[in-house]
Length: 420
Image 1 (tube, rainbow, N blue to C red):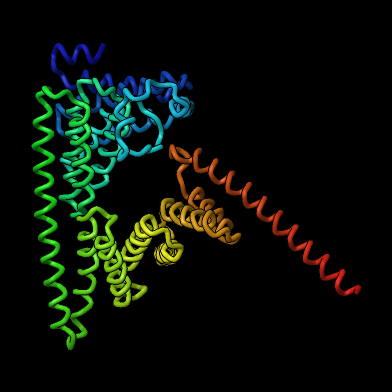
Image 2 (image 1 turned 180 degrees about the vertical axis):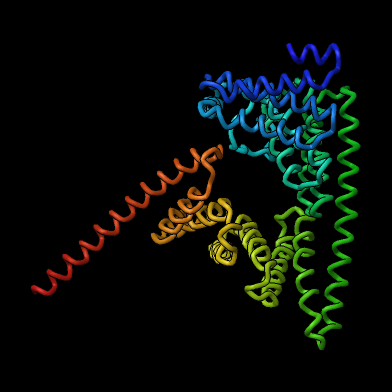
């Protein structure tokens, strides 16, 4: 009623009253989950309308908060993903069935339309405040929304183009060429799915060509930068005080050169090796009190993980664990995040799966517990992470039992030998 009056008369007080009414309903007696979900969605829509009217960023914040709240209060909906996994949807007719690059985000459930809407809200806030976290969230939600679209959906082409544009903005932000690779992949999907005479096909083809050219231009720049940086290091061999800055600048250049290639050729892996070597050399110039050192260590852990995925050498998992743990240990408690410990838990589990070391399983459990201790109860990942922890503990119990049985057998053998 209030909103209809606002539509007729354009008085902002009516829109304010509509918002107040919905907020009062949420704070009143307990309501069914479905009602609360609808209420949060309506509030999000109203806050966005008020943002359009007055350009107050707090209204955009409230719109996003309410959409996210509607995700959190629907705990039963993840079962829908399970049914989809079993095949309870029309396989082959969803964009998600054709996109290997779009992973399952697993961060709660929204409908495809709601995910696309939330993505647009994060994108709008990114345009206002230029926060990379908003760009990342826009991409995450846009991916989730696109996965549910039919290949015949009228939004398919435009949504993939929008995703490619946001990924290119990620490249503009951090200079990592993998974002250009991702953007190219998004434009290539409609090239495969659209009919030959579809007018959108030529646009996607031109975008692929443009992005490939940008990739080549950036790669040539990186090659030239590495050459010049190495030459500078040779000239500075007698000026040790100035070398640290040049060494620290060389590591990210090697990473970008690696990203430029296909990541599978031996020549490209050579650049990843150089990035790891340079990153290790950079750390020698950073004291433990340097606030930048944890960032360098986290990046080194990421590089080791990338090389492990390519070479499958356990030594790289060891390097990743050592770097990640050192970074976490250097951070003050209030700066430690759940993902820091979750990454450690997964690394330990990966090494346990490969090497079967009992203590790795124990460390995985310990780090998963630390992550859950600081994870907010309303975080949509918490249920899945608790299930993972339960499974880890079961495997740990089995491993302890097996070790105990082996110890008892050894004791029995020793007793028998002593009797002889």
